[in-house]
Length: 266
Ligand code: NDP
Image 1: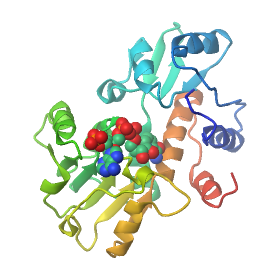
Image 2 (image 1 turned 180 degrees about the vertical axis):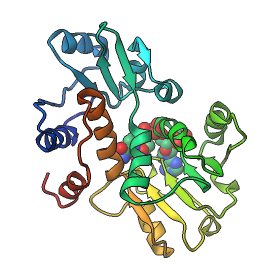
Image 3 (image 1 turned 120 degrees about the vertical axis):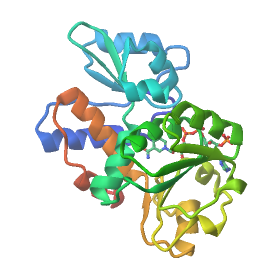
């Protein structure tokens, strides 16, 4: 459920998961009008629906609607996965963060443990990735945002162990082992203004945005000779796989699905 929703790759991704796992699944994109979200969720489950993914602009509303939240969803303040338990309680989870972590670790063989991490942005997507990243035991996380106060608010929320700090882009002091772009700057053809000193020879760079062409941020990293450069397609597929495994109790294979989307087959 979302608005807009036509662009969503989720129906194709979940249909491929169903084929690969032998599960009988019908997954479609539902356009929901603003103001009709709660009723749409009710109609869906009353009609026999088993699980929902929620995208913009309803992730916060879904968080409020859920009877029970997983711990990571509670911290994220947003929900992208809904389902009902045997007692009819509506559960909410967020799978974006674990999707990012799985993509980095399982698909790209990058460790987060002990690493100096820089996160760019302090919006909804970034709030959802901090707890799963912290679970991996990084040495330190710096959150840098155009509006510094939003980065500070996030750091305050998550800094229970002195591991998370915040600043504006101009104050970032590197270098970092891993830089994650969680801003939507690429959508406007822009790149957060960072000094080259954020990079060292082996810095891994990850843009949460996915595009068929290089994003401005990916191009920035390429121009500076970075070697480990990844976009958010794997994260998109991994967050879907996590939702699928919550609903169907079986984890689908993801590498082939990423490859199919990458090659333009879906
Ligand atoms: P929000 O609107 O909640 O936050 C946007 C963030 O980007 C804010 O921190 C904002 O800074 C910053 N920003 C926007 N424009 C610029 C700019 N020109 N220069 C610098 N910073 C800028 O968006 P979301 O958090 O929901 O999404 C962020 C990105 O993450 C999107 O590109 C989205 O596609 C991607 N994403 C990818 C997923 C995946 O599965 N791969 C899943 C979810 C999100 P400020 O606070 O100053 O306004």
